[in-house]
Amino acid sequence: MRIINSRGLSDRGNLINEDIFNIEENAAWVSDGFSQYYDTLNIEKDSDSFIKLVKE
Image (spheres, rainbow, N blue to C red):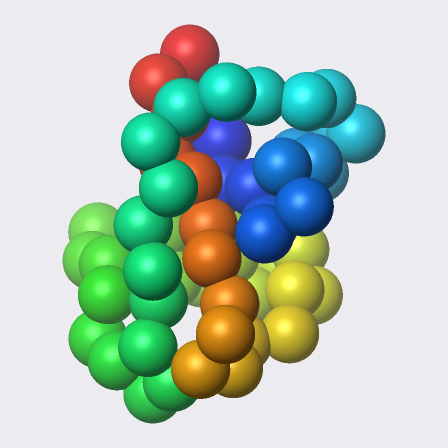
């Protein structure tokens, strides 16, 4: 899976069209290592942030 930011760009810069999930500030939004992976992408998390979870 890839996690991509609100502009629709993944860490590889690919444009992806999938469902968007709103991520609320300080929410426990993922488990099983996804939060750690998200942190490695250095995407700023705030109340307006969106990510996508894309199966590969």
